[in-house]
Amino acid sequence: MSKPPSNASRRNFLKASATLGGMMLLPSYVALGNKSNTGISPNAKVNLAAIGIGGQGGNDLKNLYNSGHCNVVALCDVDWGGHTSESRAAHPDARRFTDFRKMFDQMADQIDAVLIATPDHSHFAATMLAMSLGKHVFVEKPLAHTYGQSARLIRLAESSGVVTQMGNQGHSGPNYFQFKAWREAGLIKDITQITAFMNMSRRWHGWGQSVTEYPSDPMPADLDWEQWHDVVGAHRPYSRRLHPQEWRSWYEFGSGAFGDWGPHILDTCHRFLELGLPDKIVPLALEGTNSLVFPQASTVQFKFPERGPGLPACDVTWYDGQENIPSVLPEYVERLTDPKTGELMSINERPGKILYSKDLVFQGGSHGSPLRIEPRETFKEMYDSLPDYPKKNSNHYANFLLACKGEETARSPFSVSGPLVQVFNLGILSQRLGATLEFDRERQQITNNATAQALLDPVPRKGWEEFYNL
Image (tube, rainbow, N blue to C red; front, side, top):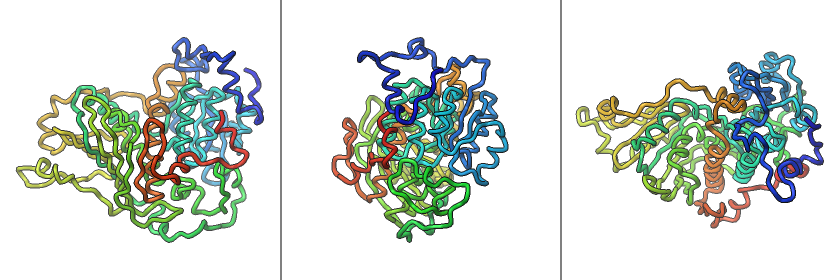
């Protein structure tokens, strides 16, 4: 393989390798229908690099490695302190980097696939560079921090032809196969209302509403704080309220409850009900708001238009906050009251979802938790006739690596997970501004709020523009 492109030439790499004389040239692995572009044989292992190896990244790395389908050849993290120690100890022979750009400059020809599990604000640049170099990518949820970043990742994933997977791990679990089978059999249809809820304590609860500025703490010795900022334009002081885990609390760097739990709760609803993008986002209730930190509680409604036969207009109402627990919709109370006991169906899954159709009501949890039909007596009566679905399947990590070798198809590629995350990107803007947003699905523009429209795709900081031009 030729030497990887330098920093100065990266922005032209994909364009130069994909076109000739104005004609798009498909790589042989695409033209021949092979899911893998690395030529990895079924008996070989995928050479994996990991960017972000502490916390969730460390857990992802462990699961990818334990699948038995990869070698770990490189580790990259901006902080080589204690929270990365387990990953370092597990892979002592892997080369170490602080800057992912230098890792690719030095090792691109030795890497088949990349795990990217950094904070939300720093998924984008590393993923764009990896795909432009023909590397398969597993990216933690949410896929990207802004709507514009998500759109670019979707486009480059399609044109590069690499295998992509977002880390909403339940999308390889029982709920994925059950929802797919029940939808294809016509059991799940005519869904007009979905209630989604995440009522556990979040990192910003209790202090977020009183913040007036970014705090500051002494800088750890092993941390490259400049590199940590990645594409974000404003430079903030180091604080334990930002690193290593608290970044999720801040609009500027994280994605709140939407980004953390939305992809684990609404993924199958979004995919198999073909929801696409909403045309209106309404903040029904916001508590403990702050211009810097996510609210203490949110109730936000997404309005999706009719999408075809059996897919009527659908309202998805999201609840987060410890006391912001939804109730059964009033028009369904009588239907969901047990005639024998007089008890109403309880919302006993946290986090979870309820799907309301003309004939049935479905309730489920998050990740791979399967649905059940409410009330319980109805579920029991229908149980023996319910459509069956596969019970033994590869998990999300093995699925990705097997897809890299052409043996399976990734279940949460960017073409699927990208639009899902864009729904939450829009929801965060409604939270942040406390505003109802009208969204033009065709033009992908917010039509009634100039501030929100600008925040769809903020300008990156100087020196990081190249990743937006790949």
